[in-house]
Image 1: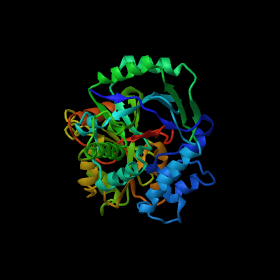
Image 2: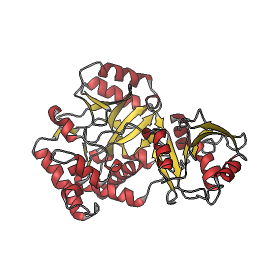
Image 3: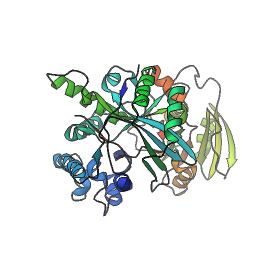
Image 4: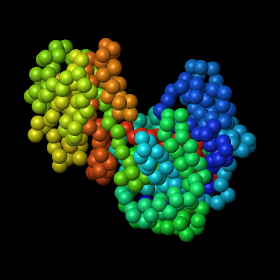
Length: 414
């Protein structure tokens, strides 16, 4: 059963929120962060990407960069740009994109739930990336950025969302990318108790986005427990910062592929090979979007094609075999194009669906890539089935948008 707790959030005063908050550390590079934070000493990038305070080219893993994060975090609190709430609260965080709003609970998630597999994952993590985030959590003694969870729908929690969000929010703004961000504080003790109680009825939480951050946060909590001779189990470090959304609120966006060459084949030879496993239909020059599961859009030589996988090429009873990422990885990328390792092969690149299919066309038309493949997006049900079955999704399967803003709420570990 999912164990969560309220906590004393550290957050910006209302009038400073837009200056402080930022995009997550892993969606932009050091140079982009430097540019976004230019002229703004209150930007959270000074804490989550502190290399921007040094000469361009400074290694973000240099010990002095981590030290700078600590110095800046202290400075933000001293200057009153980040202030800790006086009591333990839950919070509701809403994100609005293209007219759709999703509402999540900001909670302290229990480290043991992660360690014992009740917080389920669907991706492999890389130890070097975990270690970088662990250092960041350790030195600041805080989860500066939240992780992004989903949970199976729960009517009582939906009711709390409806009641809380009918009130005046604490923050309400539109970020530079056009997405809306709204936050409410749940400080009423009866509602707080109800949130805790309802989460206890939920068997599992699912990591939607932020596998490295989740691993790092949980591992640091477990490490602190091990190193504390007086460990009791109720310490703040036993919990880490998460925003948990009902699964029906979330929408996974497609994650598409572009490839540099046809592995020595002509366009006609490539299309003929595709016909062994797919019904191939010429769709002409207008952008074609996949119509459903097991239908793909191919862009090649100035034309779009519909590819429909033939029965027998996928296994709808297998949580991994049903995925279009699996079908295309095996039957197109591996068998025809000779691309076996999606993580490391330099011939392939990945384009988040937020950029639209026009971006695929652009990268082929300008000669950088030879072909593009658009996939029908994975569903939340598929994601949860995979996590429940203990399987791991193939790389670059899910793209969540909008991303959680960083700096709305920080969780201290003491």
